[in-house]
Length: 221
Length: 331
Image (cartoon, rainbow over all chains, first blue to last red; front, side, top):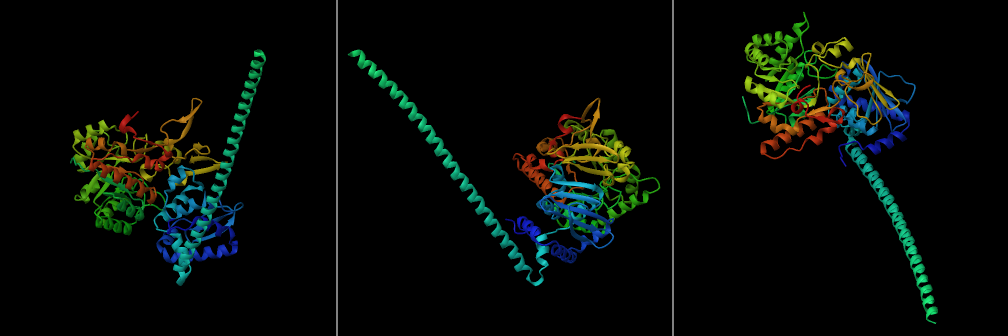
């Protein structure tokens, strides 16, 4: 596991269970923290034309609305339908996080249809280019929100993720064992059926021999 | 002029991409200013003056050269912006400038005679007479050859002109006369040679139609990609058009150029430098492609076989690769 990455399964669970009002407060604090860590990023975002982009993780029940350009940058949640944006970027949460951190080429993700872009393409291109100028490590930025306990917080995140990984691996192994046992049982049943067929054939042949023997005995008499 | 070493020339659309290119093993990076003086004028991309100075300093500290691309054609009455770009490249300490316009070449020759000049692919100099003209009048030191030449053509040109040549090794395949896409001008009303983009993002629209993606440039629908079909750039030359009752890629299919498997032939032809295209791509792309070519070139220098092409397929447009005109020539 790459410990410099925000654990996606943990993030997905957290984003599903944290109440929306709390989540919006946390994203507000995260943006404020990121403004201190990445001042260049926010200066570059402020240079862009004002725009609203919907970030739509396909594995979450809501989407994020990012506002930037010609004013303060903000990020908040919004329902999946009924909100108009200048542009939208859709994809799995993991793909979108990779995009944010510049770990994977966005054009490649576009070619392979991992992400889908709609609306004003110029807005998305400007945002992508601006984000790509900056080295963003979301795990570091989220940990930094915890102030003096950022290091222990980071360790907790990594540890919880390892625990989740462990549970996931255990469940996977149990699943495989269960199905491999099923497979063993199926093979035994098949072997049993094959042997039963063979016994039946042998019984038939034996019966034929017995009949033939009786006929031979009768003709000898 | 003929070197046994193939120089790896890599794209940098942002300072972060420049750092990535240097870290991945670029010999040289090329970049442009944040305006329409270069052919990758996308929003949020390119370098302001401070970033250019810092980028050149960083590259030089790491033994890497920097070329500044000023390869669009000045608009009448607005030459000052282009002249300013040439002056700024000189101030920033660039190792060379890449130019296409004759007037700008003349300005650079007169104003900064000591600043090395390369002829951009946008000049479309694809024959010996043309290249020699530029050398004679503007003392160009290197020509970037258009992507319409076979390896034999490249070798012949090098023999005839005895010029340093830079050829495209990875990027797109475009059937147009380099830098002069009249289809794009027709569809958008903007000129690629002046504005610096062949598919301006402001005119590109993607529509998600029940898992089918429709790409449009201006009011023209260029393509429709069904579910699971790789998507492509919204460029007019890669559009799927209907003609004579049949829908097909009339000009060129969405496919990427990759010359990693023909490096020995390019070297034997006398090529000086290999150009990786993609200033508009991310730093992740730069790291991956430059790293792959660095390894291939090191293998070539060591006399071992190169096996790099498969690694880059996903980076190529449409997820497919070709050696383009190098092997098949041009239609």
